[in-house]
Length: 428
Ligand code: GDP
Ligand code: IMO
Ligand code: MG
Image 1 (tube, rainbow, N blue to C red):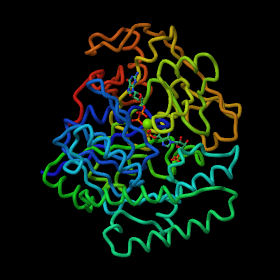
Image 2: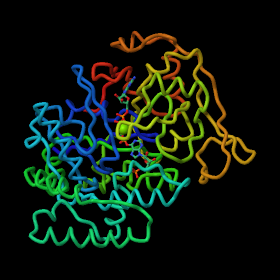
Image 3: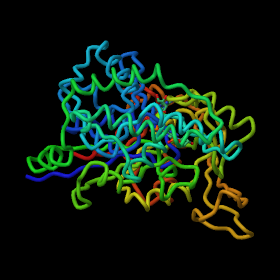
Image 4: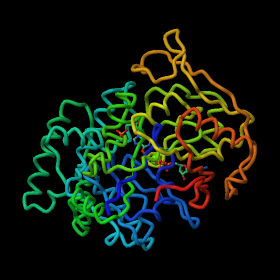
């Protein structure tokens, strides 16, 4: 019996709560697979009073009978990867049993991080606001056909391949007035490589397709968000991979006709870290309240996240490019502090009212047009079923479902695994 790959991904600018929801949905799957991005991601999980942030490892790792796959589309920094594994092993997670890595995943070198830093410093005010984890330079080497891959560590020539790529990077760094020293980092980097060697390396496309043929259920876990996609995001203020559903095909080696449901996660409002356009961003006290109430500080860099109201034209765009079949809304509890909730339905752009995301929102003024809905002013964090929802929350959900033409199947009302309300049957 053949089965399909469901894809779960962020519909905004990242940090929608993907880690939490993947952890909640994992019992319904056999395999959880990351398909793109790298340690720029920070996916937070909370259960039994433990809070844990994952960067490269899929968010199904705390379920001992599930297999977690780092797919070919992911980029791995061995230093961060080893730290993640060490922390999990300390918590008693049998990482060696539950984690497998694609040989085709690319490696982030210490000099990739230096190049990221140099490029951002050089851009000055126009910087992307990168997490500086070497993501852009590593994907550049991948598409430029210079990259080092996980499979290379099995080759006797690995040392020389590393040295020649490092030398290439040193050449690229020379014209920048950028100080860097990778000598100490290199030692930990090679320690990380040793750690990766202890794990099971696979050809993930064969592994996953074989498992699909035998009826195993697979959930692909996205990183970042659709508005940070290299093709469809607010370029150039984006990341360097395809964060949209199509990325699951190329990042895992599964064909488009093997994709089942596409689960789109969105926050009940909006946040963004780093530079780039954000039409509904709030610079006032309301924005500050959202940041405070939502603890909106980056899970990877600790940077304060920019906050604003929900943006329906942007969400509709993300739903379209991903083929989203069901929506999950997170952080509804954060909106409990407001008497009134605003929803951006249109933009005022170049003298017109439009309901779509135009090509150039980087340099042109774009002004959100809002609808207003009454707030529920009620603590949601202790709720355990949909029947307990305040009527204003039901109205908010109905409003969004109608506007977005897609059902909201999960409502998250707090960071903990248990604070999750499944509204209808989730994909089996
Ligand atoms: P991800 O990158 O999409 O996995 O999201 P992050 O982990 O970067 O950011 C989401 C943050 O919100 C984390 O701190 C989560 O613990 C937290 N979170 C997730 N869902 C909820 C929710 O429904 N309510 C609240 N208050 N916090 C949530
Ligand atoms: P998760 O998976 C939020 C942002 C950075 C920057 C831009 C480019 O936790 O949702 P990069 O390091 O990729 O060169 O940065 O993308 N960014 C994220 N923002 N969540 C993330 O991941 C992000 N990963 C990258 O802040 O604006
Ligand atoms: Mg995050």
